[in-house]
Image (cartoon, rainbow over all chains, first blue to last red; front, side):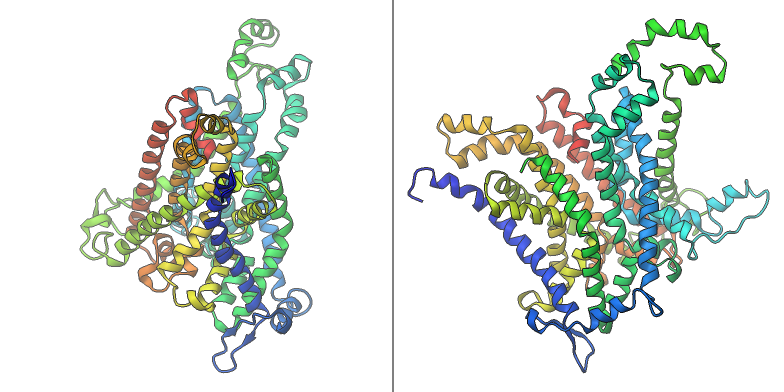
Length: 299
Length: 313
């Protein structure tokens, strides 16, 4: 401390220290507790999970049970996981198809209305996700407005029950719920493209479509990937959209497996195994996202 | 950027229109300077799809009858009119609302200072150690909420000193962990654009490192701090996964959990009214935050607009 400049060197680690301590105690240790529970034992009387802290004493019987029931004849955990992959891929692709034209329009042709458009695009961020789902629960009820619209104002009766375990409804809910999170990164990426580049392409004889395909689209690729990751990662862990819009095991997702396993003490260790499994499956995309973010920060 | 796009057709368009008849569809399609009507229609269509359902849900919170699908006249019945079922009179509803706002304030008050200090530390402290913690911070940002929620749930149900903190304490701990990355990311992005010059100039003029930080850097960071405050608050009052796993009794169940528990039962429009109250709180926070953002980033000219506020988020 007596050294000249010593105080300035100590300043930055000191500022970072509380955050470091926080992440250590409430992010890294909890992740380890998940391992200790997944590979722990069951209390013989209470049937509740007992964490085992020493990795050398880990017991893999519960984890083995989960893994052996994902594929094969008794693979009852397989379908929800497969369905999650299906839902997430389709819903993320639909999010992109909807979000790209909207982000493109606002970034390139927003003009004077850009402020208003942005406010409206950001609005869903301030509306509780649960409220947005509640809104659709109301509309999709058997006597709701969607059926009324389909019946063309009562011309011929439509009483489809949209909320009793239809994959289409859940998919719709996922797209509706997550599209806003896709639009902002796309908008930011498209807005960063220099208009002069597009003008140069047009001046050199490229058509509107060619300019888009050969200049705009390649230049927005990082934003597309960021947007896809931003919507698909949380979607993998989503169980509440399914619970609210379907509630049926026919449309259960990966998140439902975890949520159900956690709710009774006997299967809690299996729930912990599912959590680890989800973490491992998502590790590659998560690392990709972290790496690209860090490249942007220049650290 | 649009000015050049719009200026060009004034010269070239007449020739083009002379070739292709104005009314023919193909001619309109081929016109290289036509307005992007399809994109415009798509955008407004999207906005309608995105916002109209919520507007309808808000509308039905003012319904005079019990239905959430057929309109029976305007009233404040579900806000305070009904002596038993309204938000004002049903304790389970207004407790949820009050508790949600309470959590929002506490978590924001902890997260933002912690995150700003963390961001400054990570940004200026060089080496492998800060790089490792920056990685952990970003990982906590992308990890699905259910993973973090359950990990913290296991922590507070199994590990010594934190055991039996389930309820408000553990909800605050879990939420701060999940939200911490927002202020860090926003403040670091702002630090990148500020650069080191102002701070170095202050130090050259005799300020201590801490003095330069407090009197020069921190004021420059106010816009980022306000943006993250609003974002964290709005995100906390919407949170569902973490608060649900870490709630102990009905008294620690916020609005999102209340909606989740009752939406598929037979809710009255009081549930819509409850959600609308939360929406109003959220919009109020954003408006105040935006005005504060405008105020602190005044003098940066065009940069103080909604556009830059949005890009902060």
